[in-house]
Amino acid sequence: MFTFVPLLAHNPNRKKMVLTERHKELIERIGVFHEHKGMQPLVGRIIGLLLVHEEGEVSFDEIVEQLSVSKSAVSNALTFLQAKGRCVYSTRPGDRKRYFALKVSDWREDFQKDLENISEIQKFIDEVLEIRTDKNPEFNCNMKDFSNFLGFFKKEIPALFERFKRQQA
Amino acid sequence: MFTFVPLLAHNPNRKKMVLTERHKELIERIGVFHEHKGMQPLVGRIIGLLLVHEEGEVSFDEIVEQLSVSKSAVSNALTFLQAKGRCVYSTRPGDRKRYFALKVSDWREDFQKDLENISEIQKFIDEVLEIRTDKNPEFNCNMKDFSNFLGFFKKEIPALFERFKRQQA
DNA sequence: CAGTTAGTTCTGCAAATACAGAACAAAGTT
DNA sequence: AACTTTGTTCTGTATTTGCAGAACTAACTG
Image 1 (cartoon, rainbow over the protein chains, first blue to last red):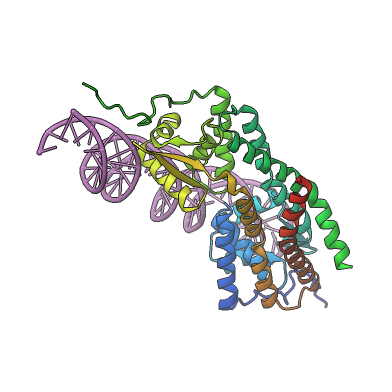
Image 2: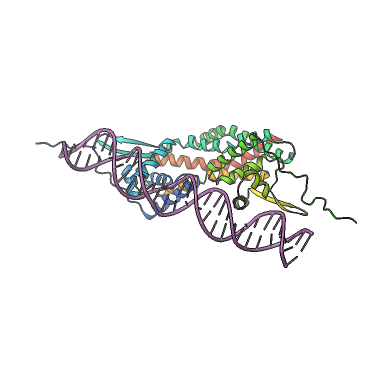
């Protein structure tokens, strides 16, 4: 009699990756880097793990084990990362686990968003200029210069990406 | 008999500026903007106040009054801003007060620093690439692309400033 | 030298954060 | 139907943060 053994079900070849000290240390550094950007510690560590993990995709419970944190913390952190669009999961037939991965392919968009976010300060500068008296013309002038530059900068971003593409080809 | 009254001492013309609702609301918004960048709340509010204040320079105790916070909080926040090089104070002959101002004139440097900070992620990407196996070539390839772009971007920054200057003239 | 001004440093606390652990839910397995 | 797997949500708590208030310092003032 034959017993059905599903072929890819819960792939037995997929073992927990062994992280060297170098891996762990790099994950920590990537973690604090992201903490400084305002993310919560675990979120940064998870980004680190997903970056250095050879598969690119890591299961929920491997994240729990590799970072030795609670399931609840991982669940919340992953929800956050997915909400921010920085992370997605996929599943395999016959395997109920979720495999999480960074959206590295979207780095262009992400970076562009970061740049636009930086220049968001322009809106404030312009509001400030609107409201200011002309008691301190030099101050106002410096602000106006900065605003002009930010406008220029924003306009230049697409061209920058264009030039990169051409230079690549 | 004559009594000596110092002319500029503790300038009686300098009154506390009256902040309208619009001023106050803008200060708050500038505050939360900076909070999101990782600064502590009061630091962001002070930046806002120094931006909208018509004099550009604001005394320690006017900051205390306008933002209704304690001296200690203001003292710490200003120490922080000065350490970061975003703020300086000047004094007047015959007046012991310190007048604090943003270094708006340095916006070029500041912005450049911000940009370089963004691309600091490149260091991590490169370390990650060094350590990764080639089990997932597509992932690696995307990362390499991103790293290349960041390198390109950093190189382009000075030229960007140059073009702005020419376009201004 | 007692009193004022201008600001700093120290101490303590209220609120927010980041996480653990337990209870829970949903789906599959035996 | 009981049990297991894979996560989510809820509750409690240790830690950190951000500030107030008091004590302190340094310099000037009368």
